[in-house]
Length: 396
Image (cartoon, rainbow, N blue to C red; front, side, top):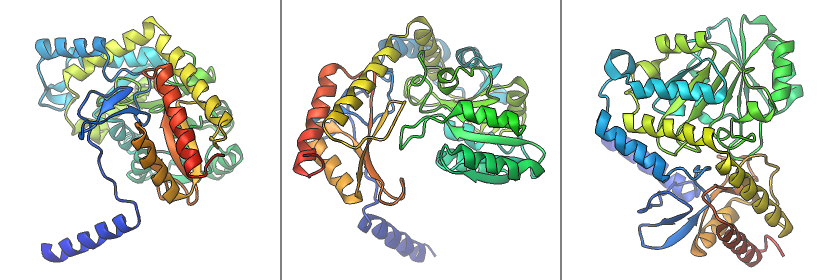
């Protein structure tokens, strides 16, 4: 039997590669940071990591993790409700709730699990989920696992959202679901308008803060801080794998009864191992760092504003953004791959994205800024973009 299936897989993989869609891993042999070392020994400036606050190699987080490794061991070898709940897990949940101004928090192995496990325990076939068209794949998969009626609105289009809410009035409960920051464009969800429509049409709101927590808002509390709506969102999901240290782990934080129901019925929580104590300890330290000082957010915001302004001055087409994601629009898929490869030759680590990850004829290079980047890193990256951009006719 496998020989036939093997041939099918080989053909599919060949088709993926011939279409230019085959994903190859680029191996890093150094800690994650502004500058990284690749397996071939070359060094590069990393502008494609989710390491927004530069905490992935932070000495304080490493020390907290090392201490927990000594005091609490390596792993829990259990799911939470059997014998996998440690004091560090509870402390981190409290810290996250305090950070976002919510009532309670539940931890997951990843935000993919948090989004995959949030809908089915809460909503049934008599309810409705109204989801932004550019929501993350984990939200899409989570919605598919739920029996609620599905509605979809165009990205950040409030007129379309209102229409879908009107259509959803036949259902019992309504939940609007949106990314806080959309990862391919860098645009921020218009949470103020979403909440206004939620009030008007008696709906709840869920925001995935994975790319916005630690980044958006003056102190990095996410889109609810940006729009001065802290405490108004019923469900927030997020990750420890981006701005919050870059390791593993996800969470759902929000209303107490919602979190309590997830502890009873959310399958990824009930049937997955607890995150390692060392990750929980580093997460606690991360929140403490952010509560003590706004220096990392301030530097990130400066870096983002500086980079985008200089790139626009150089003639590049940049998508509007209020996040640390800068989409350099190239439109042509092959051009995005050629330019990314040439930039790597210049010592700049970036990635080109094209269909089906983004819409047809919307290929781009996504640049992700970090508080770990210094002025010289930004300038070198801009200079490389200008040099390669001129070679390829992207800018004059």
